[in-house]
Image 1: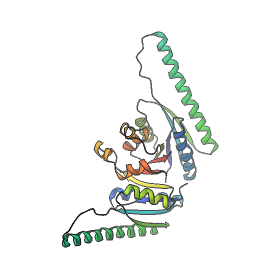
Image 2: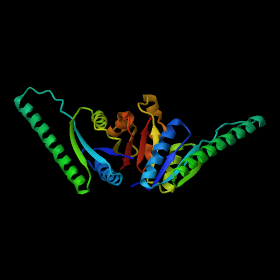
Image 3: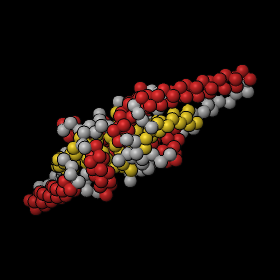
Image 4: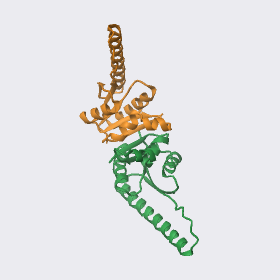
Length: 145
Length: 145
């Protein structure tokens, strides 16, 4: 049924639920997996040279962490015998980046986790999962914390 | 991965998307299917005998239609070689009935369809799928119209 599953991750325990269960589903279905981490760029105005250097260093560390997470996740996939591609995306809107990558790579399912019983304010603001659910053209499998 | 899939239906084209794709998934996974239609009872105050009779008749026809829908859906499942149970629930809150039945029958996935790009008002009021997504303890697979 599903041939190519997109699983976004930010390294959080919530995202790990989707990794664990999505990988198990992919193995059963014989599906390919694409794992994506979206790194949001800083939007900081700084004129001081030290501040600019500190921001650049923070950006560098964030990218390093994301790449480390993706390498670990890909090693986990390889240990399960999965065909897994890992992508690092730089975008201001993670939900838009997730949908765009799912579309571009030909995924037929997006698997994500979500908290249950979000507060009214959280519902209004919208989590990344809620925003993907609102706009995705392909099925979205929501795992519950 | 999934052994027992709950698919709610109200006979609408939107619900049919979940039936078609959910049945295909169940066949691939070798999963059992439970199809449920939730019929919301009338809440009308009437003292006139003719009105009471008309309401009773309307209720009767609604149940007849729901049973007809379930029989057709079960025949569709049988033709695909699926193990399919069909349930008619009478409840004021379809989302609560769906979650309660999924829990009681031991389902490990709820498969439902949803419109994309709902308006802000629709989002606030919440569709049945949105309400199930908010409260379900088990994964929810959302097919997109």
